[in-house]
Length: 300
Image 1 (spheres, rainbow, N blue to C red):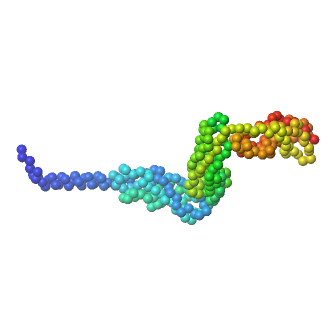
Image 2 (spheres, helix red, strand yellow):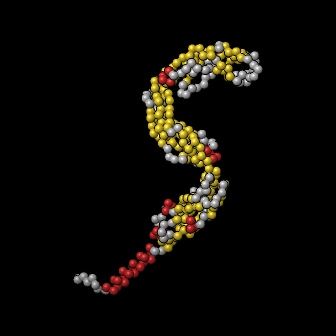
Image 3 (cartoon, rainbow, N blue to C red):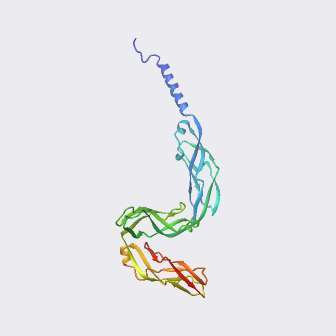
């Protein structure tokens, strides 16, 4: 049978037009759908204040073409809240549909909740020491004699209330496990409290000096008496002890005769005969022990 492509051409054109019209009608249908966890962004924070707590997300309803609504995600939207004119403390700030940015062709019809919470506190700043987070132990027979950090301090910003309870910034971890020589590392500096931040991102150079372990003996170190009550006298027996100091050999070689200062603490002790432990102040990374471990203190 012969093929006649132009037979009933009018009917074919009408059918094609009706199909196209149906496609445009279906694809162009308007619909509405909810979108949850749209991020809230706070702008124009007043000088001298810190935003410490806030509503992180809102839910919205969006209207638009059904075909477009099928592909949207929460990250396509952003609710912007202007903090201009806000004050110290906690406040509820109304939020409208026109404050939510949306992809072209979509209309935000509803925001839930209708207000967001923002807490503003007094801003503060402080210079804090940087403490190296050193992990692990050196090889047997070696010790850490010194640790240095550069820069030694950083400026920390945030709510004054939180700054006052933070003593230092810290580096990322530096491992010295099994090391028998100096370890050097460049690591990031941060603050444990998530409400605080550094004035500027900082990388610190951490040098952990590791050297052979040694010890040095002070054979006749005089025992001092601390915290004796006013008007009383004390006699220590024996009055001298031997002190052994352990640490890096180079550090031990620099110790003076006053490096070992044993003492007894007689806080709260009255007249009489008392058996008390011999104590030693720790000097850097050195460790010390005394012999004998206890002495007799006679108070009168």
